[in-house]
Length: 172
Image 1 (cartoon, one colour):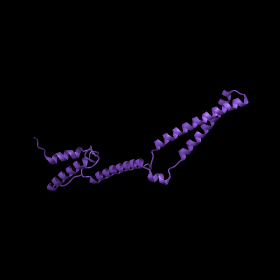
Image 2 (cartoon, one colour; image 1 turned 45 degrees about the horizontal axis):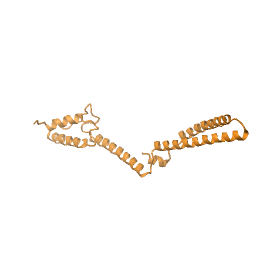
Image 3 (cartoon, helix red, strand yellow; image 1 turned 30 degrees about the vertical axis):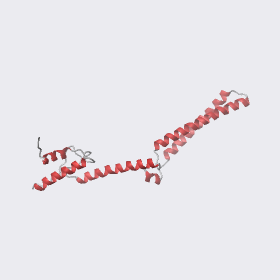
């Protein structure tokens, strides 16, 4: 069985502990290191020195930065939980899901309009005694031009749309 000096081990751990390790499960390790080094510094007349290890984002005695990093992590977890709760409650929907569903509905409506144009072309051709394909081609050309123009207008309107205050407040 080997024995290690707890102060030397704590100093080594503190010098190489990644800031990500200092959050969550590593918080207890960081606290234990601080207690060991704190008790050692109380015995030592030399006092504390604040040094910054090269691999660490936090100085050795920078508890404020640690607390800020921990609070940022907690805030992110709260944001994620709030979002999940809003989705489960049905008070919020994902924009990607809405976009997918609306796109599907629009494709179905466009298919219905194109079917109506084919039927209309058949009716015109039968009543006027003209070629069905020519009538259908004319109607489809007009429809495609209309669709292209409306698509550009709708894209401009979508780009210009801004979130309302209620949407900004609920934005998670």
